[in-house]
Image (cartoon, rainbow, N blue to C red):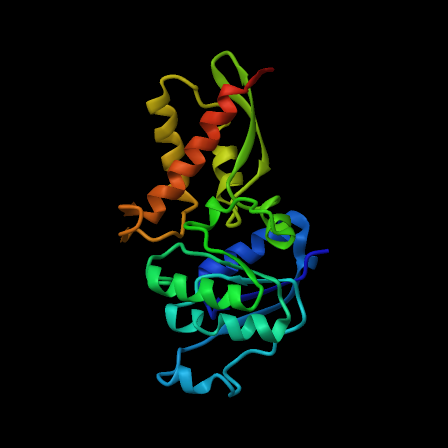
Length: 235
């Protein structure tokens, strides 16, 4: 069984929604601990050995969900305390992990023999060949759907794998009954559902992808629907 320690921000919807959805889907036993950070202290780098660092259980995987860049710098220390062999750092806001910080963290993790993934957005996560990240990614990450079609409409959608935040399940429910043609109308319905949930990724333009991460998350679910329609069964 996968043992996960998650770090989130206190009273922040992003991390809470993801954890709640994972638990709702039947994987609450994954979480061996959850730490909520409060206000970031000004002298955080001087506090590495203070009580600001959380108590960390021994676990396999560290899951970073929406903590600011200053706190991301604590991850190598948290990983070491946990004896973890893998870490997933969600990037649904470009400010959480700028490219320079990501490279720094990747190097520090590599030196500790820890495999890391920095999905941008988190719903883009794929299996990478590490048993701990892959166990998580086999259940939550880039969406995979199975669609049944009847009379030119979507009759049913089975979510084989969905986004960690739960938006895939919501969108799938809303698309049942929608016409598959014209595609533009279908994508309008998908966009409406994507915004209604709503997606919590940032609307800031990310320099690396040249677009908002929220938009990328919508393209990801659109690609999943398109792929499922190509393999659709008549029901």
